Image (cartoon, rainbow over all chains, first blue to last red; front, side, top):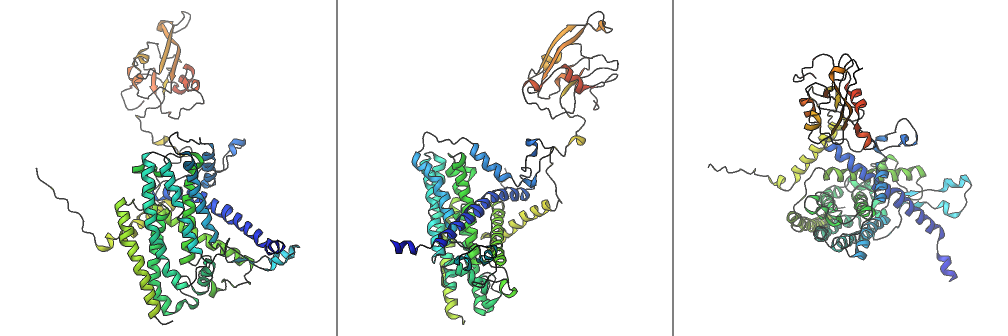
Length: 397
Length: 177
């Protein structure tokens, strides 16, 4: 027993808890809230509107002369507050247990996948020693990833595919036709696109030869991003030729990611025009909000994964030649923070792209969606694996 | 009847596979976004700060109001025609006799109570059309607000406040009101 207690590394556990709180609750959840705001503002400017630009600090409520608008940045808080104040209505005809379980099953896997995404290089805490903090743990830099798993992408796919259960259960337990149709569509859609999603990153993993997302990000920091192999060892002929299958991979991955997160143009499970609101028709209040947040959380994690695999994760473009690269154990704290900022900036750009596409493309018809998934994406992904393998074997290093 | 055969456009392969069409679509939406961001295009009017008031057309029908003439006499003689013609029955009038001591005693009647329920009013302008004394007009006020139903009922005092003085004969069929 004593040896077991000794084997627990307290500093490691505390660091993990701090990272979980920081990344899930202080980064992802606010990002979810603000991507809803971004969705509304971006859709507004695309449609020549203004969007929510007024919700600010309501000084007039406290006797002030004028409200401070802040360009509507407080809107997510107001939206959240609204969900709390709504009646949490459970219709009489639903299957209660599954009806209550479903929203959690959408939100939880989306948040859990955040564990393996490296959101920064590492944080050097030795400057705390100057402030009088003591301890051996200070001098070992903390890796900016919650769980440094060696099966990162596999873990993400395994957990993220659980999200489909939430949607299916929601559709089924609601016991009415529109949620049911939404649930059925969602099942078939997510299952068919998961295959393309999984196959699309195989070429990437073949190139890296590693499943650890932190190591993948470090490799790209040193040798150039997979989609921008322009520094380090990236300038070899092999890397430049491999850019073609990597790009195909990237396209398949992004399209499958859109389908996987139920985003337009693949938002068939909740398409408003035919299915009222799809699988969450019968939901209200915070239960609906959990579906909503789950969708956006999945979108953020998906963007995080795409950024990590293809766009260098936290690495700064041309970081290594500019001296802004990661050096193991010797990365100053400001550079660590800069890496985190760089990761978040890339994710934000990706989310904006998600939103941009949503407000550009019309929704696919259901049969077109299935055809695209099974007859195009699947085959293309398979062929891409073979192409990559052939190129890797035949091209000289 | 002549049959028109619709010619479907022949799509090239890159259009069929959403490659060029996707880029085209993204460019269109981006163009709209940039035009709005740069302020080159402005569609929305920020209502309480910016108003359309200066551009209201002459025939605009806003809140109905009572007017007095140049002598300060209330023009309404309480004939109740507007009350009877009002489609949503928003107007309530209780007439009274003008006492003989009043300089305008020969007018004989005036409203003791003249209420217009602005929750009911549909701004149709029939009261204005029917009024033989040119006493009621639709003004350009449109932002009628109140915190209670009672507040939304315009009484006589309020109606004269909105209406003000209207001098001389008003050619109410003209554009100018």
